[in-house]
Length: 209
Image (cartoon, rainbow, N blue to C red; front, top):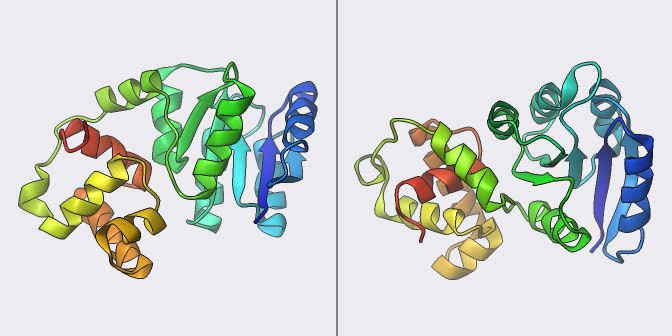
C-alpha cells in the first residue's frame, strides 16, 4: 500500500531534495508540496495526503498555525514536523496543535523514511531529546489509576510504547474500533489533545520503561 506524502517547507532546495529522496522509496508517493502554511492548508483539502511533512519556521501563518487549521479540517491528519528548530516553545506548540511526530532536519534519510511510515500508522515519532522537552512541559499530572479503568490503562501503556491502534487491538485481542473508543475516552478523561500527548503522559507516569 502506498503512503501519500505532502511536503510543506519554504526552502525550494529542501523540498526538491525531499521529493527526490522519497521518490526512491517504493511505498511512498509525494502528492504535493507548498512553500507556506496557507497554500498547504488549501492544497491538503483537495489532496488528502496520508502524511504531511511540516516545517515550522515559514512566512505567513507558520507551521504551528497550519497544523491547527489542518487538524480542524481533518482530525485524522497525520502530521510529522521536520524542522531545524529545537526551541522548546515551538516543539511543545506543534505537538499541542496536533502533530504526532517531530524530527529535526539533520535526521538521517533512514530515520525520516521510518518516521513517515510510523506516522502513517498513527504512531508517534519523538527522538529522546524532543521527548524530554515535552515531558518537562507537562506539569501537575493526574493519576491514571484514579481516572482510568484497568483496560484504559492497558491501552495507555501500549500507546506509550508507540503501538498503533491495530497493534493494540492484536495485543489485547479486542477490535480496532474498541481500541479507538478507549483512546477517545483516555484523551477526554486526561484532557489531552492527541495520542502523542497520551504517549508522553504514559512515560511521565512511569507506565512505560
